[in-house]
Image 1 (cartoon, helix red, strand yellow):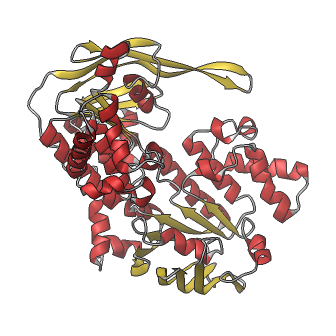
Image 2 (cartoon, rainbow, N blue to C red; image 1 turned 30 degrees about the vertical axis):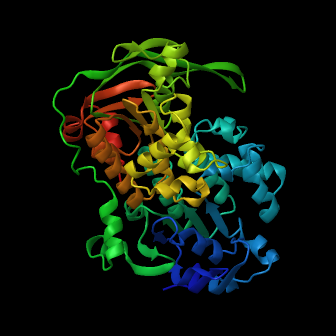
Image 3 (cartoon, rainbow, N blue to C red; image 1 turned 30 degrees about the horizontal axis):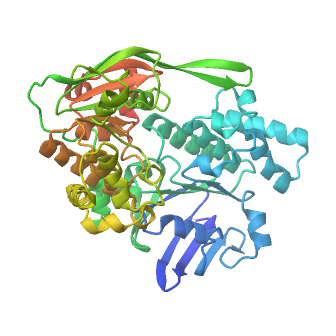
Length: 526
């Protein structure tokens, strides 16, 4: 076999007295994709950052060897050596393109920067190359997109832009760190196919980091499974799926919800709790050619039966979260009607409006940004109790906070912690507890598990199912992963470009989808 593009041997990372990565070894060759998989905190990203010389943690000590083809040693390399290979020979695509892209620079400037630095191209040459790259990654209207800023792109478009930047100098190695985690399944499938195509065109070696073995199964030929910074399994992808040797690998495989898995327990016929009729939402936005109107939601109607879950699914930009915003008062609708037990939700004002809003809870996708980083967990959970005057006195508030924490399987002691002291799954449990504090009838879950590991996601889905059974909650479950939608939903509403494509019972829709778009969504699930 030819010389590997990157060979990592006995890599170790220590921060203070703690060993984060312990003796990790792997190699990736030209035209090959190696998957590194494990839960959050297992050392996946730390391994790759240390191996490529990007680790910049205070007090971190890296040992072992990481060799780029041609004998370039990256562990302990000088800043000059690292600058010469980053961007030129190694490209990076990170999980959140929103934080990786410079908000003050156009897409063209961010692509041409590395070309000017490493290839010494002229202005005309870099402009031509930038256009070629934007066309290669499939961005619509490429000439106009070159002059766009990151905030003018969708999530999938930003990730395509990141790939264009990473591939600008045709690197030998591409590091893809959770590049599809926050994307809807169709965009995820497009990004996976895009990387495959670019790999075929350029012969690039790829290291793909993910917590989801379903995604790794689509892209990788070899898999390295990490747990607590140690390699627990290393084998070809077929062997890992067919004959996993370690219990931890089997747990990762079992944790991912399956599209043909069981749904929630059936609920006897119940009266509708929420009825939405002809909901219409429009936004006025600025464009390079002046003001324009975006028709985000176009006459959408649906109902949610009491004690059941309606799964609202569609690609990014289909209008899912806009509907949630309209129901919770965060977005002003242009027209339409929504009633909760017959009471008008959209136009409620004053004390009656506040009382009605209390009956609708909301759990966001990112629990870290939805919690106040300066407030303790107990303070965040108690806020709805104070605003809606649900309990009297500090002692009663403390007792109710403890009850809510225990309801989501957290110890009362968590009330004294700050969000940064919690794991992602613990923060989402806190967000659910805060939403339940106001004792809502309807709980809107807006991509509430999209940013979580599959094993943590499985535990949160189990929690939500238990709470629905115990408290009789009604859910509006917004998501792009149809396997998650299948796990909790009694009925499913499929949206595209602000319109309803299909609205049926979950059993009927998953067994025999009527619309081509629904079949496309199902086919895109890993």
